[in-house]
Amino acid sequence: MSDPSKSPPKRRAFLVTLLSGLAGLFAAAVLYPLWRFLSPRKGTGEQEKVRLERASVPLGGAHFFNFRGGPAVVVQPQAGSFIALSAVCTHLGCVVKWQEENDEFFCPCHAGRFSPRGEVLGGPPPQPLPELNVEVEGDQILIG
Ligand code: FES
Image: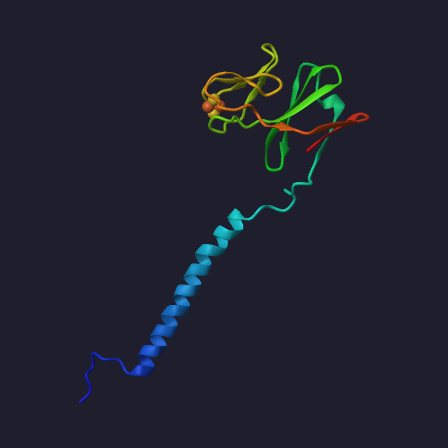
């Protein structure tokens, strides 16, 4: 007599194949979205530059813009002199604000302060704001 608790070899092989296939599908369903999330987006390459009108950056003022997927800012502390910086605070990643009346950047999260050149003036930020390359071409500013 055959033991009913023992599956015949063909049936066991079928179940192993079926479960392996389901495990593979499950792994693909989890890993593919993760891979897509971690992959760099199109158009965020190192060569990408941002072109702004000079007139969009007032003397003593700031113009915020999106740079390679993150916030950035350009200021004009003196006529014709432009400085572009990442607008992400180096403490915990909040976006800094420009305070024209104090001529400095202020981080609203923990009161970090930065000069128009991005140097730390006070608060907990451990490093200056990263500076971006700026070129002036006629009435345009090229950043990146
Ligand atoms: S995140 Fe800017 S000071 Fe903390």
